[in-house]
Length: 262
Image (cartoon, rainbow, N blue to C red; front, side, top):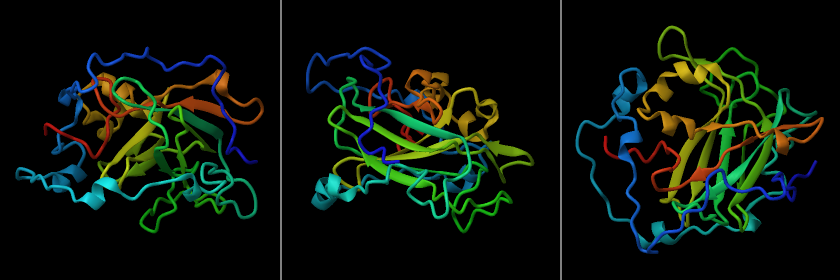
């Protein structure tokens, strides 16, 4: 199935929130730093060694970092946004078939076109195709777990996959990660990369995940949870989840590599 040109938006679909134009095109939107988790969070044991102990240094970016590389449609393969087919060897991967779609928006909820969006995840059993993943769940021979796409002129993106499973991790005796998909967004160069992850509506593990609990703002957590979009589901094929990504402003999506105010 080639889903490269399909569009799962319903006719008349609008963003979840109304468009709010800027009064001044040069107006600066202050980011809400209260929603960011601290770099040092003992409930998330890995952060103890990862968190900086000294003030960070600001390094000036070079011209090549700011201006390149430039991504075009020629860089995207026909199956790159179809994780059900892009690694299949002997058949489709096992698991609940889903579609994830949404828009990439700026602080005024204007679409951000032609942005490279990458995504990666565990398989339906909760295991990544990575040599350091030693979880006893099986590796699916027909699932690679990664893909990419470009937003269209309206900032819209979509991809098809199987719903990832939760998995245990060595934080405390019985810590489990909720089902989630990782996202990476590129601007005009590698230095303009933002990383986040998406959770699924109704997952009870979200409320008890130590990583989620490092986020002090409930609304920021909610913006990482994709609601079921049943009206965009494909009958007898895939359920659909909607995940809009806002780059800046008071309602921005929480990005893991932009944790200011620590």
